[in-house]
Image (cartoon, rainbow, N blue to C red; front, side, top):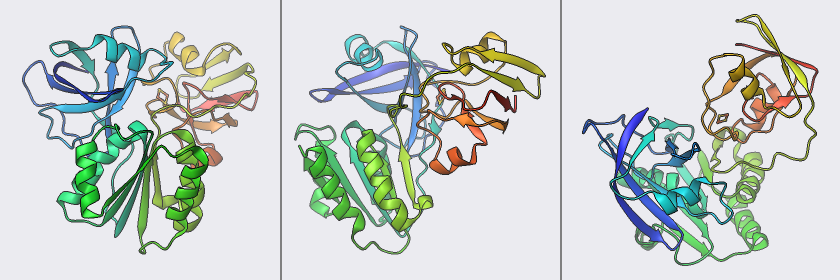
Length: 314
Ligand code: FES
């Protein structure tokens, strides 16, 4: 973990603030590539993940936080309580949304999902590489306006303001069913419905390997009934009961099993664990469809079991 000072706070739009943090020791933190995020450990006990919107050598990290109405306590706390001069605990950066080198890159962003894509597009622009950015936002006061205005002047970006879900889906259909240069890869980050439509349209045409996504909020986990099951841990030899009203992660932690976790919402992938037998009931937003079907990994913070027993590589 890193102890960091908030060195500046900027209001990027009516509901988005950006925060810049530097290590309290004055030392450089680990560098971060575009697509990276950090965990922010809040004094109220919550841990939230925020994408960095600048590639960095580690001298400072910059992230943006949208104040979400009905916030589960993360964005509300950040907006109402954090100010320049405060000291916060953060994790080193992690990158689950790695930008590859492709002949053409198509970025699709919605709302605050623009943050990792700002860093990615800056990198491609600086390297003179070929990309197009399509940004869907609710109003013209969306964050990073000046940067996007500059990109729009170069013809690399298009902003769609105030489209309803049907118009957004239609626009995505036009964008993704048109011809694309061979080797195009799509990177999408935004609200769940925008990501779902993008994946549905792009994956059959470009291949699932060419569609990359980053969730910033949990997707709907469906209304499945929570049933009790048993978990066997092959390395420690433990057998544990997971009651219907407790998560698998909480049972593992209570039994003294050392396991990483961060978001506890199925977004970040910190708790992914190997499954040796049994069928997981996947409820996360991290694993790909292929990984879910393969059934060899499980996010233990939110997922459960479809079979009476799961055997884990723990
Ligand atoms: S702790 Fe983040 S996916 Fe499980």
